[in-house]
Length: 331
Ligand SMILES: NC(=O)c1ccc[n+]([C@@H]2O[C@H](COP(=O)([O-])OP(=O)(O)OC[C@H]3O[C@@H](n4cnc5c(N)ncnc54)[C@H](O)[C@@H]3O)[C@@H](O)[C@H]2O)c1
Image (cartoon, rainbow, N blue to C red; front, side):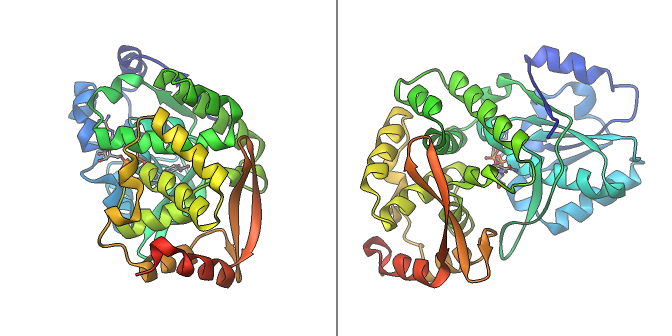
């Protein structure tokens, strides 16, 4: 991966974008952050706006976006900009990876989650009814512009989502674990997460080695996200919690609690009994569609100790039994 991560203030970002004002400019952007953008982008005819990015991260919107951009005259030499959270950068990056056999793109993440994870690493894709990110590609943006000024309008729910993903990093890295427990400023922790992910991805862009560890919490996380329509970060944190519970890893569960408290996460919202619509069969069917499944085996990321995670292949049918017999999941 060769993305350049650039930290900047909003006015500096405007100045950078102004370089493209009189030329051809194409973007896919989240409608919710429209007011954060310079006026000329707000009125540009070449911006494909998303009203509800996660709901539009699908084949149908992908097709509409490609058609819109082609009609607008996008060329192989054009660059596509993505302004929004992780759902927008995933969809825009996927469009960039495929339109005209692939063009360059730049990401401007606007949520905490996208600034620490979603926009970094070049994994792009869209959802299918069978599950999250079932179609995708590896296509890194040339630049990732990180501008904390976008976060002023973020809702509590989205702050919580970003912090959920931070909690995952707290198991992967000793340094981030310490920062969380000593309640360092969120921008300091966020920067450490972005640096951590960049390093991992630079050494294993195509997920043939250690990059898979970044999927910690995602097997259950994606299942919670698809089934209960929770935010991505809350799903990952909850996925991690229930992984420890199902596997009876009490020490890791205690670490989860400590970090959740330090990050001021609303812990009661990470309990299954908080979701009356939870259906164990639907949940299991999403787990069975996990992309880390090879034949009858699931590649599960597990925690040995803080800063020491590993992959274990487990028979899907054995894992399914553990889930079905876990007391909180029993109907
Ligand atoms: N490609 C990857 O490596 C990777 C990694 C992690 C997550 N993801 C994907 O990212 C998505 C989750 O990311 P997300 O949480 O950013 O989702 P998102 O893009 O859906 O944004 C969450 C919500 O915040 C709103 N929003 C965005 N910026 C805002 C701002 N500045 N102020 C106010 N509201 C704003 C959006 O409209 C949306 O309602 C999922 O689709 C997940 O699969 C991808």
